[in-house]
Length: 388
Image 1 (cartoon, rainbow, N blue to C red):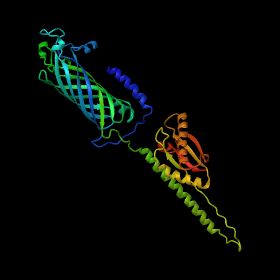
Image 2: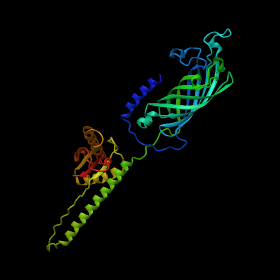
Image 3: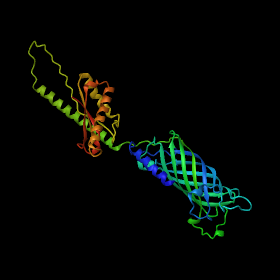
Image 4: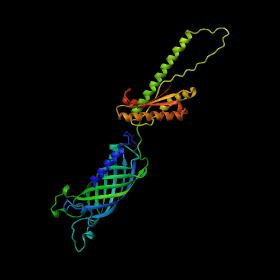
């Protein structure tokens, strides 16, 4: 059963990995990402006095199975690592013999009640291997733990070790369905039977054991998601783009200053009686960069559009055309993928210009594909905007 769940989970995570971008998340406060759980439990028990190799078909026999419940409270400290405190109450079995004992059937004779309190470490492999995705339907969560149990029928106590796989199926941001499979080990005397009558040594091989299947619900308390940390490369690219734009504006201002100084030096007074006046309006525009995250055609930061707005205003005032060129970095993706991605990036910026009031007929788009003209390579994930 465990191998089957593991196989299906790997396939599910592989499918999940395609649309999910791996990225870092910021740590939430201590009071965030708590959850509570409630489950119905079905348990199969076999004692230390039995042969430790039991056929799977015998695990469901009536003399070793019974029902119970569990409740738990836990917290995720990261998307991949959490702790859970779990209480389980079982109407269980103490398997001593398959034959009638003292005139009663084994099923009637061996009933017992016990509880177990465990502390467990949870590993969300879906988030650890495929990246955090708050909308993921299925999360595959192995865990290990230890605790203490008490058999109330026989007034015996035992430390226990346990491991299992918790599968959660998302219904909403707050609620998920649980499917939990658990394997536990207990002291050989936990079921009320003195192990020495069977000449068994007190070892892991001869411990009392349980297999449990639990079905129930998880409810997330308070904030249940994680915030994405800023994309450092995009911030660096944005800052560099702003510096480049300022340098270009400074160069244009210097050129304009030189032109005006030249006009002053070569100025000639107009002829007497001359009345002709000519006004020349010149628009100077440096290319503006709009940056994107890896593999994405969605603008990474809306702040990039502040400089684009200035170009849009100039184009509308002068009925000028705007050229938008999309780029991708050549280090990731095939040539065909990068060509398509760069075109989508150009179209995304063109759509933003239209929203700013620019006539779509005055916007030209082109796709440059994957390039490595800028360093670091992440700076090439952009689109440029300039007046034609």
